[in-house]
Length: 318
Image 1 (cartoon, rainbow, N blue to C red):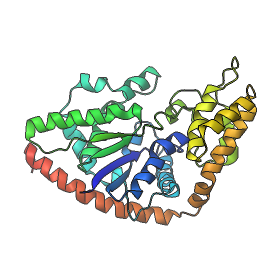
Image 2 (image 1 turned 120 degrees about the vertical axis):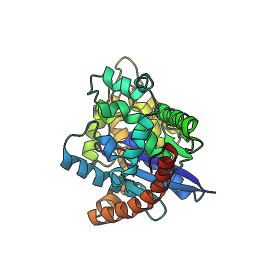
Image 3 (image 1 turned 135 degrees about the vertical axis):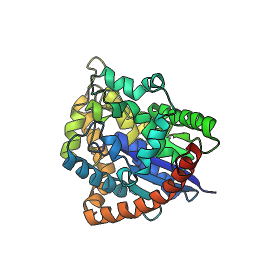
Image 4 (image 1 turned 90 degrees about the vertical axis):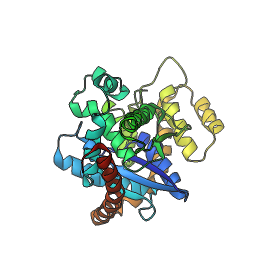
């Protein structure tokens, strides 16, 4: 039987190269594997934890679908849908919220990290892991591609399964994380994990000028010949271009201490990687996006609806 693979991204900003290597590229690779039944969710309800501008949210949703298509996702073989088009997600999240405790949710790394950085600790951010669990469990998902830093989200989903099944029987399937080991955490311009929340990103579909501006802002250590933050990003891009790490090391040795030259080289390599996708993206119409989301929602609701019916019967709500 085909394995079900599900993933999603928030439409909460312009996608960056961390998103590309951590989600888009692995999804393209997975979608080619006919042994998988792949589903992609545009997580617009999740985005409400940070986005407060409705027109911006609509625009980001449209953009992110174009980004998936430009990266090589085939909508004929992959289900792409918008989270808000499927009301079963919110219903399932409430059921799962009733399965776990407040102290349990307080241990979530993403919640603690954002609070520590002074970001708005709204209730949606706090219960985020259970909505994410609902996203996964409604589809009897086998694998969820995530970065190493997101492993805990899948562990939370499994804990919700344990709690629910202990109370109501063997209804929910426990998912497994699919860690993209070669990529791991893509560093941002400040050396931390690349994240829109940290404002340290490099846009994946930006113009070359926009990419260059972001690359030039990468924090460097002037005390050494090797700018580690630049190198760590460059290493990921170099591998995607099919170039060897040995050649990259030679480049950095040749330009030791010449940070601008190395940043220029990184800019050129990123642009070389994304330019063909950027051209393809420009040719995708809004009408195509709407048609894809409509078809995807119908498929998603059929699967999630069947699971929600089973859950309702098990908890006594029919």
